[in-house]
Length: 289
Image: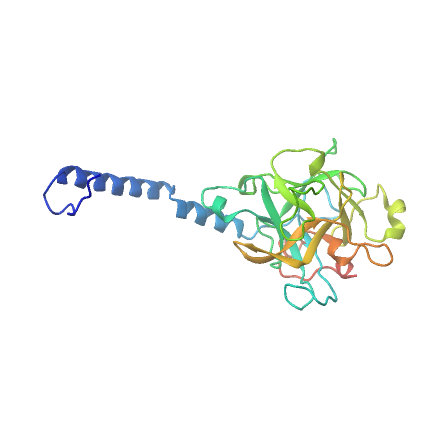
């Protein structure tokens, strides 16, 4: 194998071919740059669209409807001690897409399968907005009811229209940190992507069955197949392209009264007429109870 010991400015060997090759390389680079096809440009476009402020749906009657764009927010923990990630109680966090950084360099949208996490940035962006979609023939705009099966999807376009998915944990398939039931986002619809809402108060669940689910109030989200609750793990943090975030699993945590702990509490956050995105407004009173 021959090694070139001179640069193209020295007219020896195949100097003409070397100059043409470098000119073609530069021309190809400039053409790709013009079309926005460079890897760094693709990553920049996706990152900017991911973090762009997104509007939430406004609910006129106070309920969650099919087709609504909402944030799934865990109100946080009031009092925790002995956690591994910091000694303060778990902060308020929102469910968010956690796509691998290596995939983001080439992708134009979220691609499945990919992970999820709970971000402490309570801002409505493309990675923290989810669309509520029906499993049955419920029309768009119909109210979601307690006990009804439904899909939690990412938005179309850069969101990729992925579905929140989970399955029973096995020895080879479980969450990275806690080895609990893994929660991911996938392309296909199946029974493993179906979820349902049960009432926050365990004593009222039978009476609430079939009634509309209120927005901006605490609820519990259950995975239909495993019957495990969507959970934020305080003691486990993940390294993501957006910083450290909480691990999200499907695991029901019960207190001494057999009621779900705050790690299983969620709120469907919607917009308000005064500010449709309302990213920095505090949660309604009902979400803090």
